Length: 390
Ligand SMILES: *Cc1c(COP(=O)(O)O)cnc(C)c1O
Image 1 (tube, protein in one colour):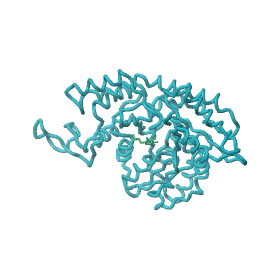
Image 2 (cartoon, helix red, strand yellow):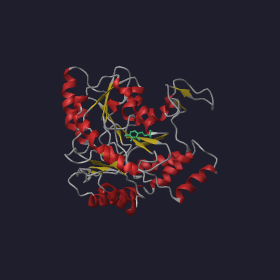
Image 3 (cartoon, protein in one colour):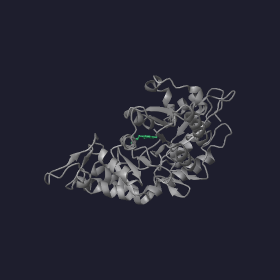
Image 4 (cartoon, protein in one colour):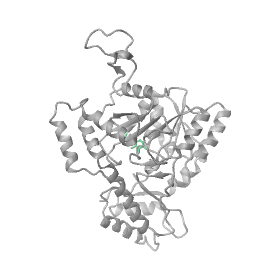
């Protein structure tokens, strides 16, 4: 079976984890801050805090930005459900902004149009969560300008995008956002098994995230509400969580960081191979904006409906039946049964709907071999019944 995504674990990764297992600290030891420093140095940001997932990172990022009941959070409908769920955890309402026709990211133009309408009816968002789909940055400069004009805060969901660049800066630098979040789930660019990270340049937000990750507790006398009662003393200042990453996971993350650029380069070489393999007019290959260098988490093609051609579902099923574990990123979030209760009007999301009817994520990971790529191409070229796929 050829999966759509897969981790790459080296002997050095294994040794890094084992050495933590043999050490004094399995959690809250030195590996977590070392991993955080490696990421903050790499992306060039002031603060980075590791969490046990990107989902928990998104949750505490929302709390840090004081998202609560009565607030509205906007995100992309073409994302993993976690991009919207984080707002729901805080009791806020979620709305969606339709995607761009070419990048499949939240459209900055549609965001602006929606903001103009929202201002008129007094329903501006408190936070907007752009998602860097497949590892390609959204139009952050424009979104940042709109944030200034309309007074919302920005959390980048960069779960796909560690190692990516936007206008010459690494994604995660927070040049155009308040907070950025990475995921280290095994299908993503680097992995810690489960894991995530929050980056920010805002000292106050970083302290909030740091506390919320660990029960809302502080041991810093400067943050306490009363004088220390002794060396054991700590204070819980707010309702936090246990969203900590373990040290052996952080050791894996730190070791993986040393190969991040290599992983992204390999993904780019596979991207180029796909471009030469898939030359038919019947398939739309992923567009890359010149402002970005994607981390290429996903390789998403579109198969527009055409007369006398198999439809996407048939192609998808054919690939799966041939052992090519293609996937679809994503079902529009508002179509999920949980979100249907909020009665979203799907006619507002015509690009997301069209995308959903045509997209397929082909396998994309550093170890994807030329043989596998050739097998994918041959499978795509084998006719279904009387119909050629491409
Ligand atoms: C994977 C992913 C998440 C959640 O990441 P976890 O680390 O699995 O919690 C959130 N948003 C997007 C866009 C993702 O792809």
